[in-house]
Amino acid sequence: MKIVANSIYKRFYRNWIIKDFNYTFNQGQVYGIAGSNGSGKSTLLQILSGMMGPSKGQIHYSIDGKELEEENWFSKISYAAPYADVYDYMNVKELIQHQQHFKKFRNNITSIDFIETCYLSGHEDKLIKYYSSGMKQRLKLGLAILADSSVLFLDEPISNLDDRAKLWCKQLLQNHCKDRLVIIASNEPEDFELVNYKIQLEVNMNTK
Image (cartoon, rainbow, N blue to C red):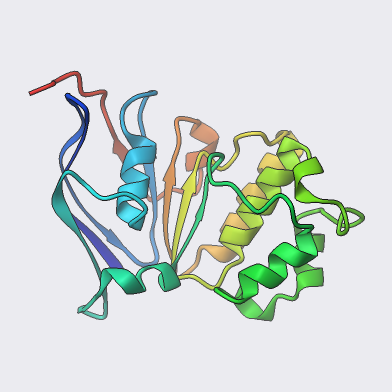
C-alpha cells in the first residue's frame, strides 16, 4: 500500500491551513505528523484518510502500483481520534458485533480477546456512554489498531490515557504495526517513539 499526496491545499474561510503539501507514504513504515495547535495535523490526517476533501490537490492510494479508487479506501483503513465518536448507546459486545460487519479483527482475534486486550473485562454489559474517558480511548484505539486494515491513522493516540495505558498503547501498536502503513498526528513526544519518519507542520498565517 502506498499513499501519495500531491500539492495538497486546505482552506477554511480565508485562512489556508495547509499549503502545497507533498509526500509519499509507504507500507511498512510509521510516520509522525507533528506541529503546534492550529498547524493542521488533524486536518491533514482527515484528508489523507479521505474523511475530508482538500481545497486543491489530490490523494492517491495504490497497491502494487495499481491505483485504488476512493470508494474502496474505507476497506483498507482504520482510524482513531478523540473526536471520532463510537456508538455509545451500545455495549462493547454489541459494538464489536457491529464493527465485524464492516471490518474483521487481525489474526483471528475474537471478541473475548479484544475485551481482554483492551482491559474492558467486567464492563461488557455497560453502555459505552458510561465509560470513563480512558476506557473510551482504549476502546477506540483497540478498534483501530486491531482491525484488519492495511493503513492505520491515529490522531493524538495517548490523549486521555494514564501512564499505564500509554505503555499499553505503545506495546499494542508495536505488536501490530508490522507490514502496515501507520500515520500518527500528535504534539506529544511519546507518540513518536515508534516513528520512522517525522513531518513537521508550521502554523500558516497567510490568508492569500
